[in-house]
Length: 179
Image (tube, rainbow, N blue to C red; front, side, top):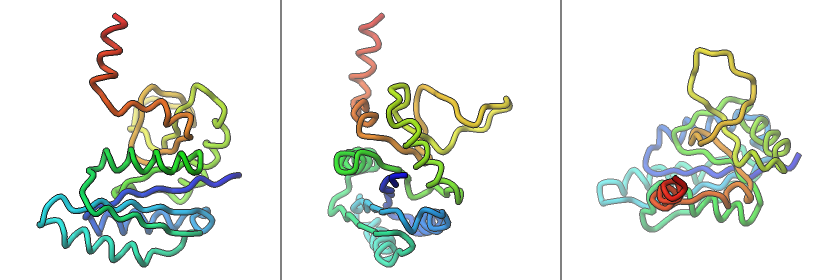
């Protein structure tokens, strides 16, 4: 199985970041996985100390095959940071596992994501894999297809990511033009 790189997006929440990384390190595949951490720049002077606190912590993270830290001098905002980070890693590696600094994964998260990336790699019906779905009262199969996405731990390939349109107005206009 080819392991996908993990990309983690952090900002100024040390406690959340610590919880996310500690849970991720409990995954069996963590020590064989490359981790890329994108640290967004402070929005304002009030956020500088908290951003620096997170950056100090992530510089000492271990438990992965490698850790690469990308520190932004300016504040991209979460959406732009994710778009740029996922795009660059998909272009380089062809696939990526994505988490944010407030996601606490199960010890089986990386195994599930990597296996699903392999299983559905050539399935045009699948653009991304998600590790969370809202609780429902119905009995659901172990895996199922949905339209839409969840941001609480996901993975994709360059072919799936190429379908992403960041301009919501453009997508809305395409929908209305079909009516």
